[in-house]
Length: 153
Figure 1 (cartoon, one colour):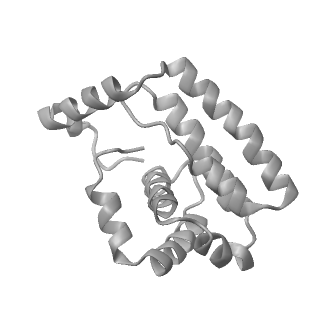
Figure 2 (cartoon, helix red, strand yellow):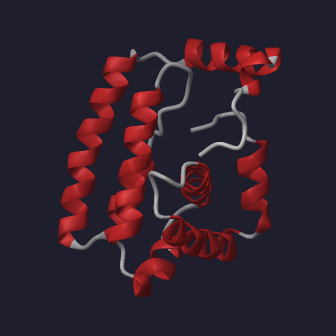
């Protein structure tokens, strides 16, 4: 449920230029990106089944689909990350977060913020608990890096 009816980001010239540049930088078509996300999903689900949350989360966070026109792949990858977060036991969250690199924690925060922006699709309670742990491990700098990064999910 959005608080505004009009997507004002579409009117921002700078935002449109960034989206075009991101699309030019992408060397893969939207079908290739969607296929890669599907392949990644099978590996992630296998890691979840084995109980290896760190491996599952690292794989889900690797090579996130950035760019304009990849909304289907972006939402599929966001759901995959959320699946890993919900499958991880509460006692393991600290170990999983500390096992991630700084870059992975930053990408995880992007997915957490994406999930919080879409509360109908994600469990916000789980996302907030993960947010707390990620910020504990990465500090406030991780929030600043995510908010300042032009590559959005």
